[in-house]
Amino acid sequence: MEFISSLFRSHKDHNAGTEILSGLTVALALLPEAIAFAMIAGFSPITGLYAAFVMGFVTSILGGRPGMISGATGAVAVVFVGLTLALKEQIPGIEGEQIMQYVFATVILAGTIQILAGVFKLGKFVRLVPQPVMYGFVNGLAIVIFMAQFPNFTNIMHSNVGESEKIHELAIMAGLVLLTMAIIWLLPKLTKKIPASLFAIVAVSALVIGFGIDTTTVANTLEPGTHLNGGIPPISIPHIPWTMDSFLLILPYSAIIAGVGLIESLLTLNLIDEITETRGSGNRECVAQGTANILSGFLSGMGGCAMIGQSLINITAGARQRLSGIVASIMLLVFVMFGSSVIEKMPMAALVGVMFMVAIGTFEWASFKVFRKMPWIDVMVMIIVTLITAITHNLAIAVLIGIVLSALSYSWQSAQHIQVHSHIDIGGIKHYEIRGPLFFGSIKSFLDEFSPNNDADVIILDFKECRISDMSAINALHTLTDRYRKLNKEIHLRHLSEDCKILLSNAEAIIDVNILEDPHYKVVTDRIKEVIR
Image (cartoon, rainbow, N blue to C red; front, side, top):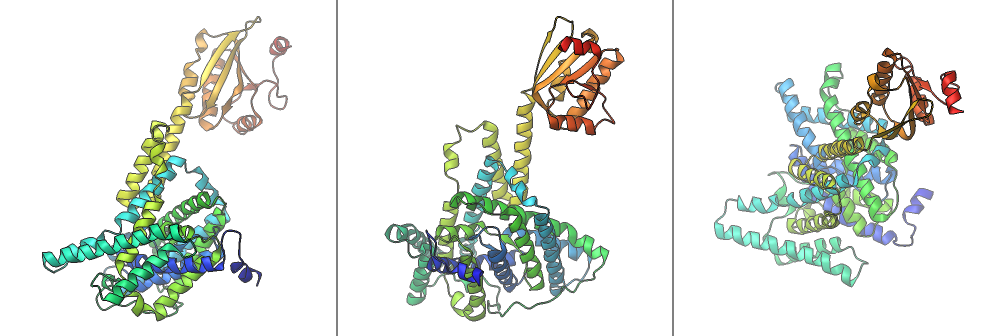
């Protein structure tokens, strides 16, 4: 009861009315995309709609980011294209309904992987995504959202009508799109009590239906003979051979879906955190996404993940709590069950206009202002991630490539910072002061600073301003120690941090060095003790 009452409780900057109206807007925006993504994968529209309902409902209740919207997505739909091809290649003669059973099983396994990611607290790794990658991700996604609307125009150009009719239809479509965008832009200047996107959709739809304007509607996007009407998602267990061969067949695609879904969801969560200046729970979102995908598989849905476009529509409309997502998912199901005939009459121009405005709002225009202030490598990473996202529509791959490039850039720059300064004290002992991080990228420069044949008989490596970071650094110390010992020369380490001592202690099997000022590790020679005193 406490949870239910909290959904309708008014907060400082919003109330239940705002949440409900925003949820209704999101439900209308979910319809065409859920249908389109199902068709991309070659599935029935109802499969995408069921997925949008289940994903949205479950994640709204259990998710780690109130206000974030989940549903059927293009990134996940593309994976199913590859799965379908693999199934047809390995199981000759497999039919559509049989393919869907493997799809549902794949979604269930993907959800299980996502839950494990949340249980083992892997959601925090989204913090490793650098800002240039985030800029590239958001900008690329805005371009993808923007370009995804153009088939509505190209379909008119490819229709079997005369040129004058095509121009007429295009003009009507463009005019209605511009009208929708104008309403969304102007209405907030007059009042913020009504969600601009919802008002625009209703107003343009009323105009088209009321005046009988001939334009593309949601019904025109469906396959001939199909409709949106459906019922409560049926519960079913996927009918596939539960063998190791089947498991190995779907496992790679389940892993990709799980990875793509989590990356897109956690990045969306991160983006909304920045917009709302609050903090969501990445690990909780992983578990919620996994639970939603498992239920989607058992309820005839194609699965999915967070949807940045619809999430931004929701947040922009003023929603900040879970109620908006719950309303959106329930209303979506209500539309499918009872309002399909009305929804099918909705002009696509209204929905296209809404998504155009979402794309404009999603794009990080501020990224242009920091071009000259950012390091050139960060600018390149941002551009590369944007292009990969826009060209491939594979957000996960784009982000991973961006992270790898940023990591390589950081490693290269850090490798340039290693410095070695030396001096000989009155006892003839040579001291080397190491500055900078010692890791795989800097070990060559580090080793090049030493010449054992021409060096003193006793040397001390001072790590007061250096950190031993990885196994490559330990191996470099082993190599250096071995070179000096072959010449019967002594080498000692001092001022190691506690974690560095532990790292060296754990590697005793491959390295044996003297560590000064640490009686728990090695005994220093009397000669060194005397000099230190």
